[in-house]
Picture 1 (cartoon, rainbow, N blue to C red):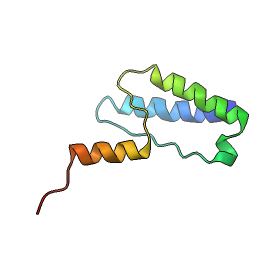
Picture 2 (cartoon, rainbow, N blue to C red; picture 1 turned 45 degrees about the vertical axis):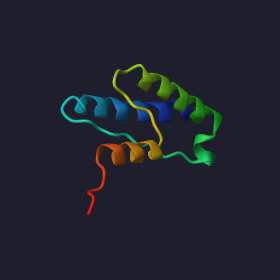
Picture 3 (cartoon, rainbow, N blue to C red; picture 1 turned 60 degrees about the vertical axis):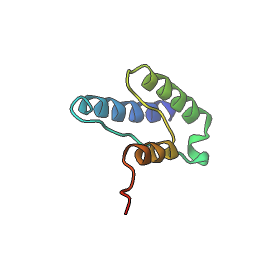
Picture 4 (cartoon, helix red, strand yellow; picture 1 turned 135 degrees about the horizontal axis):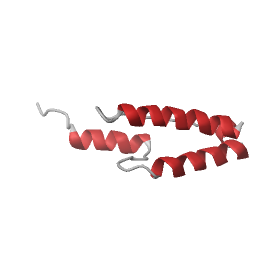
Length: 79
């Protein structure tokens, strides 16, 4: 159900948030249109994003944004 999906996401985030006090953490959520496109799950995802954005220092981004950030901060060594 949508409530179960929200609870799963929230519990995972809350644990990573606590662990992140010592070292940064990353949470990746894979979405498939057939599953996450269901109205109840889409609503749960929207609620989860609202919940996450209520925390300081959380970066909600796409995978390409992570890759670009990594390349900018940790450029490949030049030969």
